[in-house]
Image 1 (tube, rainbow over the protein chains, first blue to last red):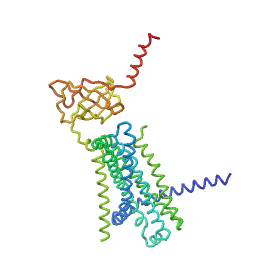
Image 2 (image 1 turned 90 degrees about the horizontal axis):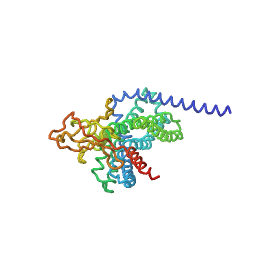
Image 3 (image 1 turned 120 degrees about the horizontal axis):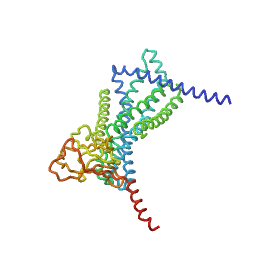
Image 4 (image 1 turned 45 degrees about the vertical axis):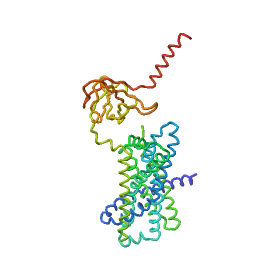
Length: 261
Length: 157
């Protein structure tokens, strides 16, 4: 009985301590960001690694998600003779939800896991410790460029994903299924609002998801147990925690932005 | 050389991202119809506006000529005051034009339909449309049908 309670208490204390360390980690990370103004080259290199190299998966996924939305929307709307609002359906679902969320999930799998593995291996092979020995702050040299690059890359990738997805929806709906192209764009433009939908959905959501995904990835890498097993465990945790955090925050943000109270 | 290549790729990446946002803003959203609102304003008073919303279209003969930019309640007369912004290209609307709140399709969104009158003078900025017809509220309509059928059926029982 007592042993069970002790177990629960220990577990919660352990988790709380980890959460606290994660927050202190974020604070140190933000503090180290200002050194990037002196060395923008570091940022460019990381932007290439997390952004440019993520483009293929984002482009292909966006195109196919948009095409599937077009097909599914058409199959359902045709029963009501409302296929002219297909453009609205595709654009709003991509802009408000699918674009930011799917991009963040894909980013966690493609770039977040790589970040964790990289930092984790640096820790396991004591590269971070030797940097400190040489009076180089790993937060400034290693972590901050990766964090800022990731936070910039996610909104950009989200914008590309959404635009390509809408194009995919257009290809299926107008080119293949014969929905009227004018109605497709006109209904979309009538219903999609610049600030309320694109600003809230694509920009704010993806910025929040970008911070979350990179924060989790770097923190898990930094806290890795310095063993081979530890690195693999940390990589897995990055993908799992980022996915859950993104979905949870997405619900919160949607309730705040589009909720009807 | 390699560093230059890297910068080129990142530059392309950022440019692609900006292009995507530009497409979203210009092609997908309503940017083309906000900000530059050169239309002239006219107001119309309705007893009931049903589900009319700000930004609902204003049409004449099925052609969209403007949109609703404000909905307010007159605290004295308890009437809804709807402000319409009309495209200045259509500046020859007779002053005795009528406005009614219509529904596109059976379940579609509501919009303001204008019917042109026959006067020689035209509506201008600040004019008020006097001839208005409120939205049809489906529940009231059904209620009226029900009471009339009930009244008609009563003697036979």
